[in-house]
Structure formats: structure tokens, C-alpha cells
Image 1 (tube, rainbow, N blue to C red):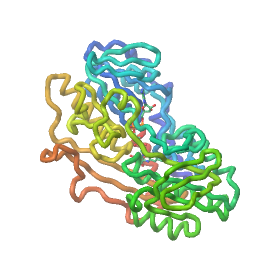
Image 2: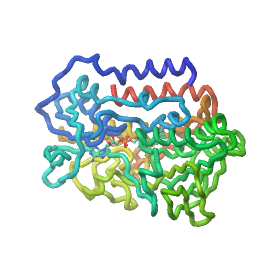
Image 3: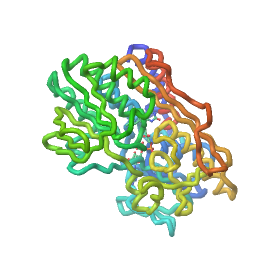
Length: 417
Ligand SMILES: Cc1cc2nc3c(=O)[nH]c(=O)nc-3n(C[C@H](O)[C@H](O)[C@H](O)COP(=O)(O)OP(=O)(O)OC[C@H]3O[C@@H](n4cnc5c(N)ncnc54)[C@H](O)[C@@H]3O)c2cc1C
């Protein structure tokens, strides 16, 4: 990041990270209906904030086990030293102190959708009138994949820091192997972006090294021309991209991957991004109805198709919209609005729209972007991409790289400040 983009990024983040500058507003005991939000990521934190913003009398409780949120968005830039984890870490204090959300640092171990209660890890039980579940993703590893030994680094935090350390310790001329699961998964461009960022790092710091990409999909899923050009031209001789490669097993001690179609591959650093499903609490609450992995919801309200008064947003929902933080923020606002209308005896808005945006660094000073708009289609009762909407950057550029920091800091600000 150059000096001016770093200055602007930090300036914009100031609003999202200043912890002590708000007066302590007492947030307990609003007398209105009780809404519990589970999970303080892009989806859940946005929902909690906007519920209170639009309906201050609601009693809104956010349950999240971590005291701070570490963003997966922009986390690939930790791997090539462009950002530190601190710069993409956010406190929930502003949600509590400025917006009046009751923030409970715990996790939900059980959902009782019949008597409208959740049980916390501490054993405490909370009652709700409406429950919003936003627990993100869980992983379905292949045989032999020990998630603590072979990192995915797909939920930000410690795993990303550890992957960076592994890269730093890798010898020049070494082999970095990464795998991409079959779609859908969190952030469609994310793995291709990671291959580029790591190739960029290795090109400068570990000459002679290789990045081997094993993609379970039929081809590069998004921005094919840009990522294809990066693999074949910018990182020619460094990135080796293989499509339609399905993993069958991992030796987590020896760092060897086995596949259906290729010889076993030995890595110096191995980064397996496993297949994904809705967060674990969605499964234990019996809310999985889509492809055995995701929660089916009414796209107007995000209310579960199987249990009343429970809404699911973010990566866990199964509407077919991309699994990404920008659109999770939009889904959360549609859901918060619907919850307020339903609690007031009304009906959800019938023409919701959402949009998605992903910026992808290609090197330490260029980036690309991808965007799409979705709207409710009453004929299919689903969210569909609006014809002619969105698109992608014509090429990776320095300008996109600068814009990426403006875009991400305004998203972080909208969620956490
Ligand atoms: C490398 C990378 C780059 C990305 N880039 C982009 C991008 O450019 N644009 C974009 O839009 N998206 C991007 N994404 C995707 C984005 O990060 C996710 O889609 C987004 O984080 C999903 O938000 P969420 O709230 O559904 O889940 P999360 O952000 O994972 O939040 C879920 C929260 O729920 C909590 N939780 C889970 N279970 C429980 C429980 N039982 N009780 C209480 N709390 C619980 C967790 O602790 C967590 O804090 C990227 C992702 C990666 C990995």
C-alpha cells in the first residue's frame, strides 16, 4: 500500500475503531420486542446496528464469542505484508455504546425454535420474539485434513498470521500448493486472488518458488480473463493452474495432497480451502434445506422456510446470492427492515434489492473488482441477478488498488461504527 492509500485507509478506519470516544449509553432493558442476533460478522453486526438505528425501542442482543471481529475481507493482504491483522480488526464497543445493542460475548450452543429460546455456552438462556442467525461458515474437510496443521486461512485471524509465517519460513525454490473447493464457497474470487498475492510475494522474496493451484471447478469461476492473464503472464513460470482437480485426501504431517486425477503432490507450504456449509448452529437447529449445506429462507425476509421467527443471513443462507461480506451487509438491512415490519404486524417489503462487490489485489499495487445487483423475482420467488447489472474491471490497475481501500473502509465503517 502506498503512503497516500495507507493514510486514507487508516483515516477512514478511524470511525470504525475508535473505542473510547463515545459516552457510555446504557443499553440494557429497552422495553420493546426482543431480537437476538447470533454472530457478529458482516451480516450479524449490520443487522444488530440497523435494527436499533431504525427501531430504537427494540431490545436487540448480539451474541458473538469473540471480543473483536477480524475481517476476512482484505486478509490476503496480510500474506504479502501490505496490511497487519490489527488494521482489519474491529471492536463491538461502538455497537453497544453508540447504538444501544446489548453485546454478549458468548456463543449459542442450542436453539429452541418451539419455545423461542437460545442457550448460551455459559448455560444462560435468552428468550426472543425474532432470532437472526448469522454464523458464517463451517468446513467439510477431506480425509486426513487436520485443520490445525494444514491451514485454510479462510476465516481471517490467527490462521492468516500462521500462513504468513509459513510462507516466510519457506525456502527459495519451494512449492506452495493451494486447493479451491467446488462452488459455492465464501468469496468466489478469493482463492484466485490469494494465488496472485502469494505469487507476488514469492516472486520478490523467494526466487524460483512455485504456486500450484488445484481447482475442483471446471475453470476459473470469475474474472477469468484477468486471473488467467495474471497466472499465464504476470506470474508466468510461478503459478501453475490446474482445473477439475478433486482432492481425495491429505497427509497433514507430510504435506502431501492426493487427487482423483494427478500424482500425489508434496508441498513446502500447503493451503487447503475445504468445501463449506452453513455455520454449525444452523445444522443443529435443523435449518439446512438447500443442497444439504445451506439454510433455505424466504428471500423477502430471510425467515427460515422450516422454522418460524428464525431468520438466516450472510454466508449461511441458501438464496443463491454470492457468499460475500458486501452482500451480507445488504441482506442484513433487508432482513432488519422485514423483522421490524413483521414485529409491527406488517409484511416484508416486496421488491428488495441487494448488491455484491469484491475487490481483488493482483499484486502489491494493482487490483481488480467484480460487482452484481440482485432483485426479487416474484415469478420464481427468488433473488436473481438483475440483467445488465454489475460487471468486472477491464484490467487490473493501480487505480483499482487505491479504490479497494476506500471501498473496504466504507464497508467496515457501515458495519462497525
Ligand atoms: C480472502 C478473502 C477475501 C474476501 N474478500 C471479499 C470481498 O472483496 N468482498 C466481499 O464482499 N466479501 C469478501 N470475502 C467474504 C466475506 O469475508 C464473507 O462472505 C463474510 O465474512 C460473511 O459474513 P458473515 O457475517 O456471514 O460471516 P462471518 O464474517 O464469518 O461472521 C460469522 C460470525 O458468527 C460467529 N458465530 C459462529 N457461530 C456462532 C455461534 N454458535 N454463536 C455465536 N456466534 C457465532 C463467528 O464467531 C463470526 O464472528 C472475502 C473472504 C476471504 C476469505
